[in-house]
Image 1 (cartoon, rainbow, N blue to C red):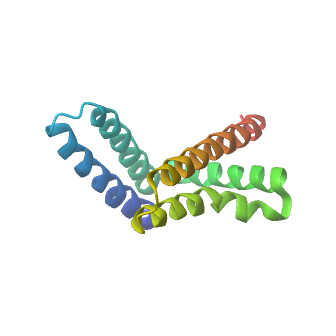
Image 2: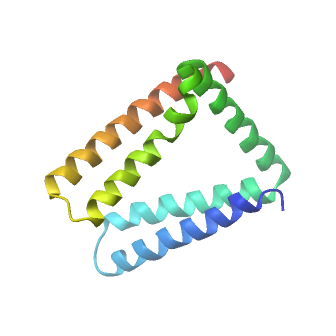
Amino acid sequence: MYDWKTFLAALLLGGAGMAIHLMKLLQGGMVSLAWLILFAYLICRGTYESVTEQGFRRGKERNSQVKQVYQERFGKLWPVVSWSVVIGWGVIIILALVSAPAWMIVAGGTAVLLYQLILTVIIRGGLRKYR
């Protein structure tokens, strides 16, 4: 075993996601099939990266490259930017828990999703030089 944290995260989060969407699929929600496939992929990838030496090295190298791209693109603010999506989703969850108006939750979720997509495109563009 090369990385227990990745292994446990893959199994716990992926397993929970699969359980939720399996129940939704059994209730007739066909969209959950796509989610099941995604969670199965994430479990397989996490297990591969934590159990095999080659997967561990590959994952570690990719994480290092992503960190480097964040540092190049955002300078000293890279830690804030790299966690900003998680913080944004946390705020949306808190808004949902305190019964904020639905329009606020939908608008905030849409804004965080768009921000996440833009950030993904920026980071993916920076990773091209490593391939």
